[in-house]
Length: 435
Image (tube, rainbow, N blue to C red; front, side):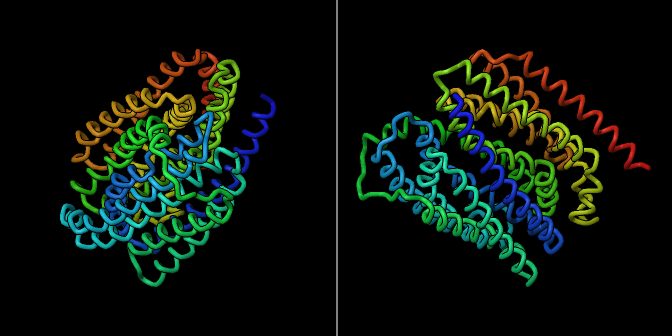
């Protein structure tokens, strides 16, 4: 247990270094780009991302998580995962390029076609890195993974800013994505010692697929939940409205992305290794949730209070439409942070069928809520997003209690003190800010 705690601590520390460094870099780049580009540019990228995300969820097949979660991993698993991913990634890249014109006509945005075609190359990048990344995560080599992530973020950010400065428009955002993906793959292959052999095993494919099929299903529901608001806003309200929503979402839920990249890989691996030790598993889970909420509550409260000033400071007055949306989306962060940790627990325990069912119902609820509110404007879409997030927080807590005997009272005790400290902080901010 002590050795596992040390590995987990080191893993989280290195993931934090890489993720926070990358998030800070990405945030700075994002802010600079909001100064150089128009809302429509971000809206066009958002429209393209909806399409590439829907197709791209099939590029992984859940093999990366299957490699991490398996108790006994053989060379055949790795070889089969790599060649399967590469074949599917190649097909999806060609499919994305061929369908780019149709996507542009669907939105009635001629500029969208080349953007979708260019972003389709990321399917190939994803296929080349998934097996390598899963192998390094399993080996707890988070130092190498984090440094690679940081370097890719810096170089791609500089490339995007330079392109935007010289008038590339939306293609500056596209270039940033492609440069990041290319450097990510190159560095990953450089730091990993594993190399695929020219062997393929149907037996190992079936073994991986038993876990991976559910993981693909989970990814489909995640994409549906994450991008259905973008899809509906882009279709009914246009690229500019989607641009304002994208900026609000990015600023409000920046910490969610940071949390996902900091503790996601580490906690899944940790939970997988403790899956037969429920007592220590509960202890580790409570410690992680306590740490997450102590950070999340003050952070999201600060974002709600300071949203107008943050938008004005970082992006300028022309983005003021994003302020109310940012405030309401920040409220969802209280619920989503805990949901993320509990979903990692289910993956680590191999409860993929259960997670798939939850996410399927969850995603459908989001889609219905967005469809009912989108014509009223992006603010009401944000309200729908936050309301559904809190509903499903209760669902996740209940199911975790059923799985491992999760202690509600200990969780709410830590939640109470996080909220109390948060209230004091909010009062202090309001007092000094209005002096």
